[in-house]
Image (cartoon, rainbow, N blue to C red; front, side):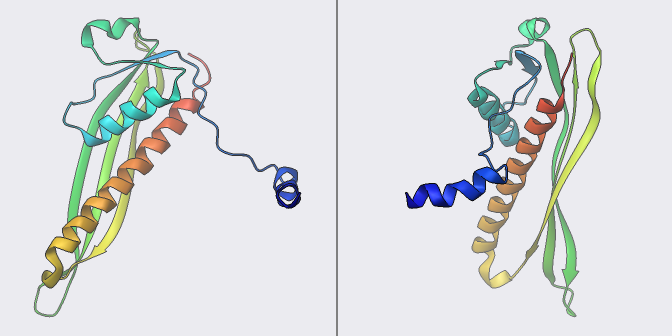
Length: 160
């Protein structure tokens, strides 16, 4: 009874759990590099949706309803802060991802688009290993954010 009492206000405000995306297409081809960590996460998420067939073999690309071209995936680490002695104190981590979505006939559904995620990270030479781990976790977080944004953009395509 208590759970019902707590759930009623949420239902009244329109709250609902996020549903898997509905795509306008049933099959998608992508040419993700086998070494791409972001590409692996993208493939895993597309497969998990369940209502889309993921095609990764180049010989099968014309069977797909849409083609996701991955144009760039770039990780950057830029110095943004130093101390008076010139030692690095802060970095900015960036993950850039450029893509486009088109039909096999060449009709552009999503024009060339760049998504950028960035995070700031402090640096301390006495904790190098900890900072390397933190950097890896931040890149992983940015990668997950980009994959989720990409899935939402793919779901926004309503007609082929």
